[in-house]
Amino acid sequence: MMAVTKSNQRYHFQTDWLSTYWHFSFDHYYDPANVSFGPLRVFNDDIVQPGGGFPMHSHREMEIVTIPLSGRLEHRDSEGNHGVIAPNEVQRMSAGTGISHSEFNASQQEPVHLLQIWVLPQVRGLKPSWEQRSFAPEARRGVLLPVATGEEKLLKVKNGPVRIHQDATFYLSSLPTGEKVQHELSAGRRAYVFVVDGQLALNGKQRLQKGDVAKVTDEERLAFEAQKPSELLLIDLP
Image 1: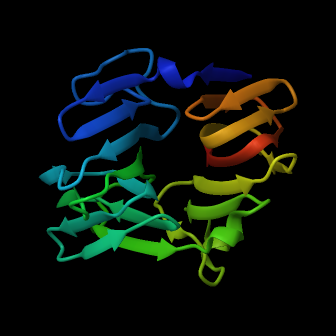
Image 2 (image 1 turned 30 degrees about the vertical axis):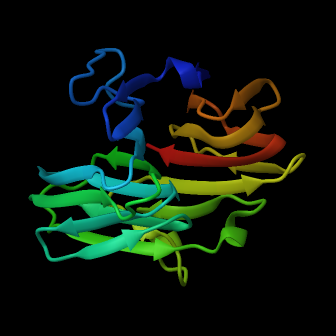
Image 3 (image 1 turned 180 degrees about the horizontal axis):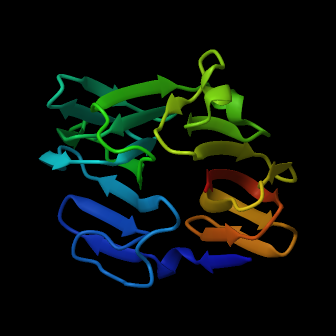
């Protein structure tokens, strides 16, 4: 079963420094039929203008994964962590018992485009923590590359994904035209698919374009075929 949300059906919010698409209920936007998907609670597709950003604010009991698509994002938090992330990097912040952080466009000239995704943790009361990691662009070409996970086997791989405290795995893939990739879903698992760029056929029947989303349940296998050069994010969830 696949529930598809087209790009133009996502909720859009605009200010003088932020253009964002919210996939789930967030801030002033509330849709009781669209609050979460399993432990996936927030999926925001943000473009932040030069010099703009989110001033210091607090979170608790949330795993927050940030994936820049273009530009650079600067992070500071109350634990003393500081970093700037750019495309081909992934950042994870575990809010745990409570953390405050700020996020600003690191450039005064260019916008930053990023995905920020929040997942509920399996265990509450964790010590707040933060990490970021780089992934070579070629590492995701023609494959589904795990970039964030709670699966111990994947975490043991050298230069592997960042750790999230949930039984979920984030995969990125870059597919040239005609390239195919598959993902097996174990019994009871679900998947959230987001087309970052391009156009894909999913399981040979569903065509997805840039900005489209597919919520997948009760499927054993996901088969992707790029109908033009494409980038995708797949989240495997309980």
